[in-house]
Length: 380
Figure 1: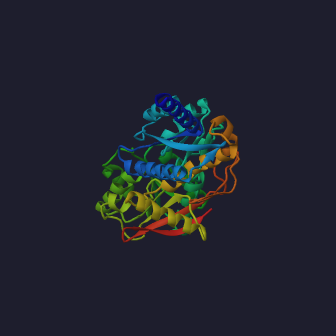
Figure 2: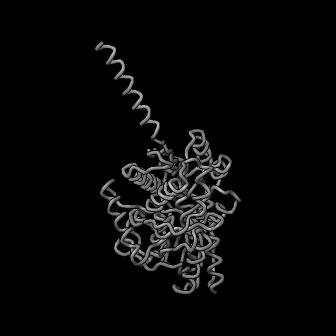
Figure 3: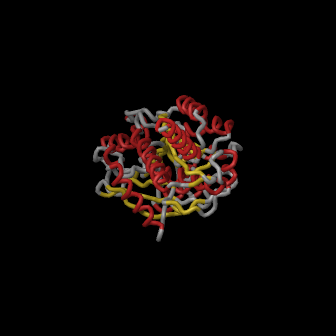
């Protein structure tokens, strides 16, 4: 009798456990960034932003369609390489992720976007700024930062109008991001009556810039603009100093990081660098960003490098769309995500236009003093 009762109890417990697990919804969020290579510090920053969002969502016990959602992060490294990016994109599709946040670079985000589009999986890039990304006609592509047309053009106008640059040299790393932002910068300079006196090219893996900087020096530039990332910009600033080039140094969000002073090995003069981050908060929104940075530092023991807050918002945007749609099925929550309007994130208010671009995207202009990044202004 006792044995029979125990068997009945075990069966009842198993049935109860089964019903509980049946009420749990597993939601897989893919994240891709370069966590190896020259800009691994930025990729790891992104990944930590994603982990922070996932942990907070799970702590909240979010309900989607009447089921408790359990979020899982599938993190991949694309090493900032387009070929590796498409390989990990296919891996995430095969794993049946519900959405993807990434990639970091435009050069990896754009080729990967076709794979996600073919699979119908929503993709939010927290940092890819090349305009082409959202202009391919895909319904699955979104970004939470302003694009290069806005970023590069604003910097170009600032160089010519505010900094009064008379002799401007431009260098880019030939990546989709670097070349794109440099071209828009040149348009901004030209439209504001400035003059570009030299165009030079390097790569995102280069370490020696003596030849191109010596060539530029002959033009006596008062501003040098670099389209690329901080891992190359830092050594370039150091070599400019060695060659006696006393020009201001400008660039986009890729070099506008807390790591730049360290990467330039102390060669950066106060106020020498002017850069722009694609995003920005003002007034009451500043507290949300400050709180995020403090919580990030407490959780991981490091400061935010650059894009982590945008990754954090991207993951939460997807979750909010799933809750509103009552489903984590990409086909069901994608139309809701596309209609995002007035979402209050730590990076500001997010609304998407018909292409998946952020509406009225802000830019924050920065300089560096005493090795610390200092805000100049938020512009739109």
